[in-house]
Length: 597
Image (cartoon, rainbow, N blue to C red; front, side):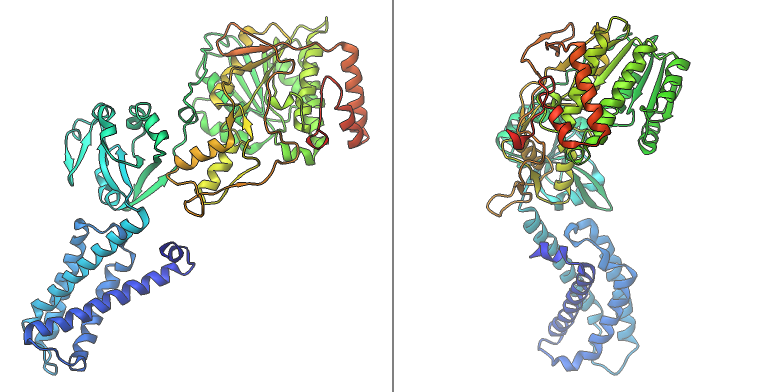
């Protein structure tokens, strides 16, 4: 019922009327009972109607002057009483002047004190009742541990949930008690958390929570304790989701030091404004480098990444498309590019299914031309960003990535080639554009059902930091022609990820109509697999860098690749989708749409 009222489009008007009617009703009851206390019998209301009208008029003036209709009564506390004390004094003065200077109505002089006092006593009681009603109804008595102590939002917090304890390491706060609630140090909480009863974690300070989160991880997951980040504004609690992929699945980032690998190198990154490209840039910025060129055809993406880089020394931003051969040739020759990381690609599976020829051109034909140019101009290293969707692809996007891998192997094996070509095959990058995480988060934040294509769908995931680090480390170990991949651990059910994201937004999974967020199964999209793979021939070997592996795959011969290339180019030029898909079923590509399995 209360939720329906909040969602009503006329809520502000309804709220204003309810507050006004509530207060005028209390005023008239107070007036009537004040007369009874003074004369010891009940008068007819008609006998005091003029006093009622004048009193209501005085209160209405103060009601609007002090904006009482804008107050959040759900957060009412003793500190809020200061405002009402001012109104009480002013109301008493105005009512007193009215009593003293009128002679038509029967008003005992003692009402100057009795009536305002009685009225404001009832108003204060009324506000506390409203606050407690909201606490009981909307929060259902959630018991919370708050990480970080902020005295400015204490009243709002006490209204938002029943606080079990605060956790804070500031010397000024530890071992203190506020409103009967202890403030514990993280060390004290970590040793004794299981003696406290709580079903909600509120994170005011991330640093404080980080000191405790692994101590209480098992407790949180076993008891499905809800978690929220909080901040405050104008005495109101603002909540947001807490997301830490590694914490969810109890894993650590597989990151290796870059050392001095790029100290003397001039690096070009295509698609530098995208998720992977930009993170390659950010990690390079933390190491030593000679010069970095950031190339992207999207003005917005390039603008966004330029804003995030404070020191732009030896950083060059290029608003260009990598498929312009003349531009690329000039850039490589003029700036003596040593290394190219090719991250520019079309990658959104459902969209590419509707635009297959655009993907063939961008992801394969244009990429192949850039590879050939790099080889001709003797760029020392070329790294292609590939995808796990290239393994036995069921969609056009995966097929184009597999074609690029084959093109890379072909060029690397040419005798005249002096460029070390390699590719990096990714699983899903958890927070990249187009990944499930931003979609799930949007749906949770807006209280929409999470849309999942299949309850059993699984994916391998890596963090965006791991993805960028993997790419940058391949240059240290590449001798040419490798397909590198990361040890990504166990695959993860997207259904489990969705449930954890709901829990760590402070909301509950809807079951049997009870809860906050529903998970809706909508069916697999066109070209989508239940599971992805990283290995084509199911063989791999370790490299010199921990957690980085090399896939062992059969080499394609020059004649076999040129035949595939010729067929693809012909079908692309003729805009013949049926023949294109037939050509993609070549044994080296192994394209097989799901509806043909």
